[in-house]
Length: 332
Image (cartoon, rainbow, N blue to C red):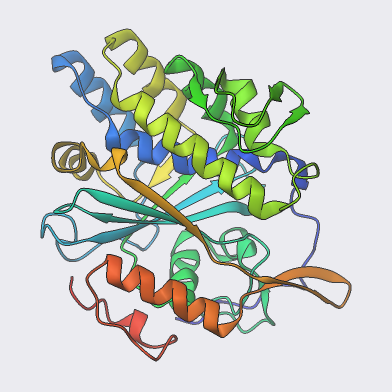
């Protein structure tokens, strides 16, 4: 695949102040995967919603990656714009590779820092931040770029935007978290080690704060994953049809995925307990400034470590070539 070269890159995509929505997008997707459906009305309401969110974007799987029962990977993307379909699609400031093992009923969330320096797949431009792949070239190129970075096959993606985040968290009655540090930021006033129940606005603020965190963006990623887990667990316990409909309403026009409604229902049936066995990790980069722009550069040893871990989670053999093997989705 060769992408058409674009005009010179502009560095003014979307302000960094709204980073929380990215995890939200990922969260919504996992939320759907973990949920249950109640009765005929709820089933058809869900079917109607997800018929609107389906978009293959050149990533329609040609095999049975899901129904084979083997482990698989989904790329969770979060944008920082309003409703999907707008021209200003925004960068994917949240990027999480979710590897799911149906047999062991386990899942792992691997965060990829938005500023990670990569060669965007198929592009003839210079190296870019990985969060620019989606606004420049779309979902397919973004998935391929991540595949080549960590050398694993990824058949599915889920893209969620900020628009439905607060609605979704509010729809499930809020989430409870055990704060990782003490801070007061917007609607979040939390104390480390003291569990607190957060509504949509509070949860967004909790996941958005960066400047007060000694770990910076990496600390924020940890809080994003924490909110995702809390939302998945809360959604899995929904017993109210009215509340479930509110969740669906929050997804319409805010979610995009190449998972069909039948795929999601299969996941719900087979992986209903996976959401309770979630582990997390981050691709750790090093600070670098190139031509006045800040990047995260992941050492090859770190890329190899994360790649090996992901390949093991997917039941794939350890590979030494991190640029070619991902093109051959062994095991699917």
